[in-house]
Amino acid sequence: MNKYIIKIDNVWKTYTMGEVQVHALRGLNLEIKHGEFLAIKGPSGSGKSTAMNMIGALDVPTKGSVYLEGKDISKFRESNLAQLRGKKIGFIFQQFNLINTLSAIENVMLPMVFLGMPVGERQRRAKKLLSMVGLDKRYGHRPTELSGGQQQRVAISRALAVNPDVILADEPTGNLDSKTGSTVMDFLKKLNRKENKTIIMVTHDDELAKHADRIENIIDGKIIKGGKK
Image 1 (spheres, rainbow, N blue to C red):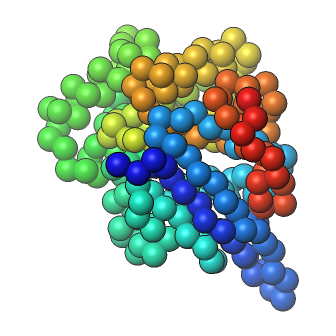
Image 2: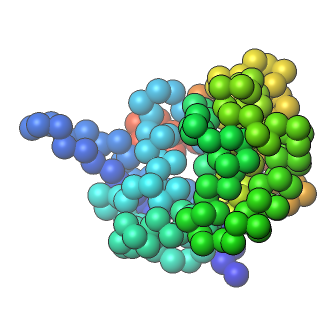
């Protein structure tokens, strides 16, 4: 097994806007070990969201390479990237991104549908995950019937639905009060320490970043100072 689950090697991402080229990433280098809890911290416009898109196989670099478990995924086709995301990576977003017409259990089951998992197995796993985050009495509730903290816990359950190796969390407590945010962070740390999940959190918040084992600061599309706790 490779020492690093993810390796970003001299990655550039350039967007063309009319006659102007915008360099969102400028030679980004980053190595992430199996089972690590890493925070990527930077202000708005620093390139941290673009970096997350690269790590999560949501986008490909203009130049450079992104390795997942030793494979250069920057050369993959979109269909292969979609399969990779479905099996290896779980996403937790600030906005929750739940489907309001589906119940909590249906939202959690959704990623398993795309993997062709039998309906009975999907239901059993979704119930187990929702119970694990304390929502065993909320299976049938839709997102609009849940508090912000409950919605984020549904989103965490959905991220874990396919038992991914890597969990990407983008400002996971950004829409929560401090007490609920603390509960969510405690749960992420539990996943990291007891389930050995690799957690990569993107944030601008100094206090939130301190929950991680390692903090990497990104400015102007590249890491400026690393290895900090």
